[in-house]
Picture 1: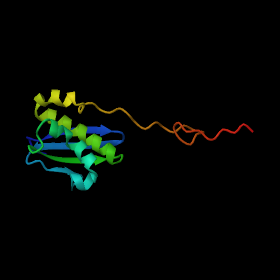
Picture 2: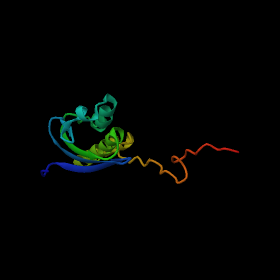
Picture 3: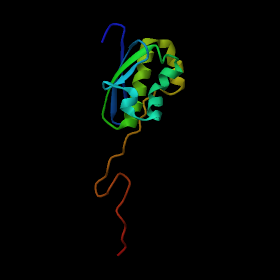
Picture 4: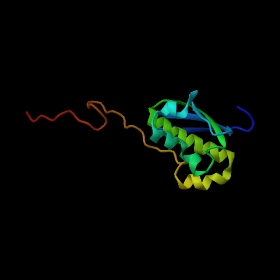
Length: 130
């Protein structure tokens, strides 16, 4: 974008979020939609805004994000990580607060793959003795 904007990537499950942060009035736009119009749940909106609330910068930055892959929960987690990383790029002094709340840690949990000869990753077909 411009010279005073910050870019970061966030990932969670199969979702990838590209986040652009620039000084502004606190407008959050995801895939060219307002945040709440996109995530549709108060809990997910709260998750996305957590890094901004902790660092007390909810009305200091405009955020434009593009997410793809996964579902709404994974995308919200990816947005959280992307916003936290962009905030650190904008101001290095915010790192301890974000680190303490666990916003800079990538959640490594992924869906376990399905195994052959089974209906799912762990589920088995019913055992029959006879």
